[in-house]
Length: 583
Image (cartoon, rainbow, N blue to C red):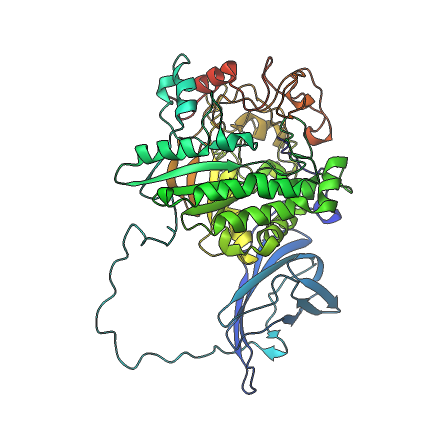
């Protein structure tokens, strides 16, 4: 699977120095005084970070008046601030005056509705927050009043039930629920020396080809898994985790997980893959299960980072961006599956070592929104997002932060971090969640983090920060993630099992999950003929010296690996040995 980043940087990033968050913020309220369509607004202008010659800001506008079909927010700076780059709005500036207009997908604001946009800017001297904002020409300077009830309620509110009524979805499907243990994976794990320590853990069921839906004489199909889940459920709640992974032209930036459908076979994807899955999940027999779908890992981020204009571009990704079938396929899957009352869709959102850079982060969020509303779908069909799927990025780096510096040099300038804004998956997931909510996804959006192989324990696990000789010795000596490069993704040597699956472990996180079943290969370390359409990717070859996607580094892969999805005993043993928390 391809999980790589663009090495291009904007001119602004090249000029960055040590970053210091200022926390500066302004909130301005406003209402109109007359007119049939009375606009009113609340604007939150927040400086999210600031350095010696530049800053980043986020602006949230809330419509407190009548609904509007489009919006324009305006303000003027008292100093010499200049907007250099924006997202989620069309931003122009004339002198000190700034105008931000909605883009195609966020123009409609109901009464009480909010939307956000952001930008980077430059300045010298002081960077004062603007004093006045207008929405569609009306000054934001007072709140729209609401009429309080004339009589108190006759009965006090009741405590909400822990289990939602039939036909409604839980805010967090994992809360108060068991999670399905795949008996096929459990048997393979238990057959390994020491494997019984984890063979009772829940893992994802991968539907990575059409044949996986019905199964075979030697493998369980979707109905067989759901029937087994009903047996495991008992009288409580139970979550079944499915990986929906079979887009046309799948995994356009790599070969190890290429799929069975060609780039133009969107019709087959709909009728032979998504429709049959939806028909099974909609069977009333399974209405008592909570079914989590993780939708098309790897696909959408590739359309941002691995297309023309980026040094990591591939011809296949250019094809998929041009024909639109990733967007079409994801939108269709979300609509079809999201219409089923007990299905919870989570879209794949890459990982911090792929999308954590400024030129990847915002554009990826916008692309997720585009896919979420494609093919007649809406954001209501998206319950959340999943990060680090089948990857190795550390959950939490304890020995350094993105705001640290060594001898005046920011951690962001280390070779490992390389100007990324995030050092680990937890901080990335929480930031991506905030970004997605700001552009129109539901405020109760939940995130999943795949912790199946990001423990990085064992004897190589650092116990404290690295030496203060340089920013590189500081970061490299203290980081848990022991990969040669963040871009390495295939069967990584030294990796270990991560945090065990658990519900609601941190703010905004619905669960830590093992969506990638530990012990299943990422790809073959040499070419192996197969009937699944899976190719040989040199990133799975331990002798490979790399490319632009991993900084021309060694691949760090284990030798003698089978094709993706097949059992890889040597990797499983390594994961057991290096588990953190230890087994």
